[in-house]
Length: 271
Image (cartoon, rainbow, N blue to C red):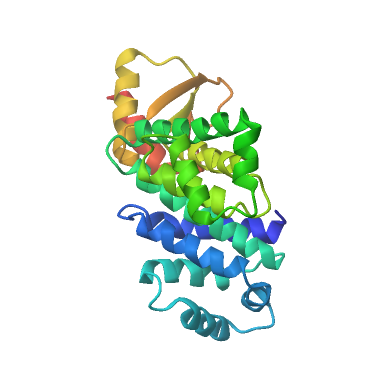
C-alpha cells in the first residue's frame, strides 16, 4: 500500500479497536455487506474517495447509502474510512475488507480464552486452505462462474465441518467475494490477520540482565494488569538496552519514553 493509504488504514484500525470489546458478528457482516456494495459500483468508490469532495458531502453520501441498512456502529466505521485519504479508489475497499475481517477475528478472540480461540480459528482457516489446495476439482468448483453463491457457500461449509461461526463467515466471504484472488489466497490473508491479532497476547520483553523466577512472576503480573489479559512472555537479555526494560505487545512499544508505565513495571520487579 502507498504511504497515505497505509497511514489511513492504521488510523482506522486504531479507531476500530475500542469498538471491538463488545462487538458481535453483526459488525463484520455489516462491513462486508458495505464492501459488496462498493465493489459493485466503481463510480461510488470514486465519489467516496474524491479529494475534491467535501467531508460533509461524503458523510451525506454515506448516510444515503447505508443508514437504516446496517448498524450505527458499522456506519460510523465506514464514515471514518470515507473521510480518510486514499491513494486509489480501490484502497478504501481493501481497507474495509481488513476492518471487517479484523472485527470478525476480534469476536472469536472475545469468546472465552482469547488466545486459544485465535489458535482454533487459525487452524480452521488453515484446514480450508489445505483441503482446497490439495484438490483441483474443489478449486475448479469454487472458481466456477456458473455456480450459484448458495452452492459455493454450501460446499465451503462442508469442507471445514464443525467450524465456528467466525470461520464460516470469513471462508464464505473468501469464496463468494475473493476480489480478484483465489479463495485460498484471501483466506491466507485472513490467517495473517489472525496471526497479527495473536501478537496482542505475547509480550516480547527485553531486559539488561537475567531475572529471577520471582521477578519474572511479578513482571508477568504487572504486564497482565497493564494490558488486561494473560500474556505469554518472551524474555530477551540485552545489556545495551537504555532504560533497563523494553516491552513490545502487538503494535505497542513500552520503552524508556513511556516513563509512567516503565516506572510501574520497575517497581513491581523490585518488589
